[in-house]
Length: 392
Ligand SMILES: *Cc1c(COP(=O)(O)O)cnc(C)c1O
Image (cartoon, rainbow, N blue to C red; front, side, top):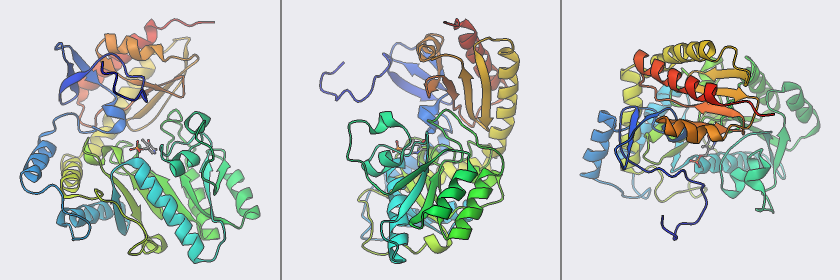
């Protein structure tokens, strides 16, 4: 252990040296089943051939020029994202927080251009949008904000999955210009809103000339069983942010815009040195092409049905269980108690999973899993949870 790393993370005492498909190997050769994908990043599994090839070829051709010049792979990727989503224009950065920063800046610019003084953005309780100053201020979790005051102003908070509260804000606050919301709250504990929630928000945004901005950083890129989670409802956002699985491990983020949001950012308004470089964009093109050509969206939907059915069966009668929630392969198993200890126990059993919102076991398995692998994941998860004894 180096003493020269800032202790930002409470890392587990294991380090992986190799990955292939759904498996990882530690430095002693121990094998693990990866049901977390580096928190929804390596959705195609590790060492996915088409992605590896794209990285290798581009590394041997050209890594970086600058946004001072046009970048062919950036244009191809923007075309592909817009074709898949029905959106119009994309700005590329390097992470989720950066994608949300771009969205927040865009919303303020949108408001200021209409002479709305102090434009406000509606954000939700228990949301997560990142760790930069603006995105942690937008985040609905005190732990993420504590110690970093003064926070960025201009956010109005509402309960998640509560349309009435948004209507009340619309009636009383004429400074609001946008809503920023996750289609499913990931860090918040895989919280899935009622059907029709996003449609209702879409309607309120239309009535008030607000931008509907969806943070699809965790839900996007086929994990939900659709390419983008908003496609489960018959709506389209004005802004959508992407990152995590877009590069399958190569850092990339995207702020995707449509209609009246598409031309808000003009030359000189925003920028990024690395954002949209040839390596990241070519990799992301390979990711999206692979998902489409192998119908992995459909696979995610089918395997999630299988996995959740197996989990329900295997955990039936477990006194610790509150409920199992999922949208595709975004899966949360809520328990009655804090279950952080489960992470270490699972690791000892050769399984990677994670606990969020203290009581929710989070599974984000790769989209490439087959039927047998799905059964194996279920078996291991059930064994872990059933081995946990209920305290108090
Ligand atoms: C992970 C995540 C982010 C932040 O992404 P980073 O790449 O860590 O900056 C933002 N929003 C959601 C919904 C996320 O899951």
